[in-house]
Length: 331
Ligand SMILES: Nc1ncnc2c1ncn2[C@@H]1O[C@H](COP(=O)(O)OP(=O)(O)O)[C@@H](O)[C@H]1O
Ligand SMILES: [Mg+2]
Image: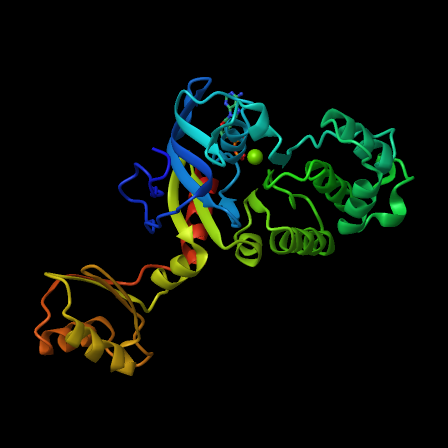
């Protein structure tokens, strides 16, 4: 249903996710299922990427990231579900002109130099007079003085940067990158990260990148989806997820909506660490050294606010992700 805000969700009851309505989604991936061989690799995967997001599609190896990306790019058909980019069907030529991508393999020709590679892709996209565009792009990815060098002489990091330039040759508004920093040394990772942030901010691109590295995703992305065995386990704005998964947080569900006067009292009590109220749901991060949950519930009771459900904050993102990775190792 175009135009309606859509919610990221998962059909796994155990999953934790933050419902975040994404208006004008640049990428819409809804309830996608895909079986490859005898295995259901994607089991009802949904997420939205808002325009201007740097979206991290995080998950351990084998989780289903590449399969999702291939479906997103129209390289693989989903068994069911809906995909759209910029509100349009992905099979339309005009949609494709608005998408740039870099996958593995990277589509670069080893025996051609960097300029020749970019010129080749400029022709594919029917660009006229691409010379200055190509020069600019080589500058953006830090290869201005390597244009004449054959790609086979490039380091992995240089190759990845050229692949990025290739993905952007036709100036698409959406960039889809499958593990753009995988296998790179720390310096090369930082270079890619800097370029991506630069592109997203300066050129206002929407970026979706996949990664199996939480640290990386936390450094680059503002919104994430965590996928494990074809199921979205966590989805939302990174800020929100960090907050609601903080170990000392307290989540409360009240019997009825909290009256404004009581809410003002709650907000002004510093030790409770009130963070937000959404309908009947309240989120607190009590100061260290308080009784935490009991303190919050007692305070609310004192205001005549009845608590229906109270939960201590979950684990941190790091704990959550490392427990998923441990499970992967044991499989
Ligand atoms: N062509 C295929 N046939 C059967 N299984 C596949 C095929 N491609 C991928 N898979 C399986 O699908 C799962 C998800 O793979 P993939 O999407 O590549 O994960 P990721 O990119 O997150 O590492 C893996 O278990 C993988 O072995
Ligand atoms: Mg992959």
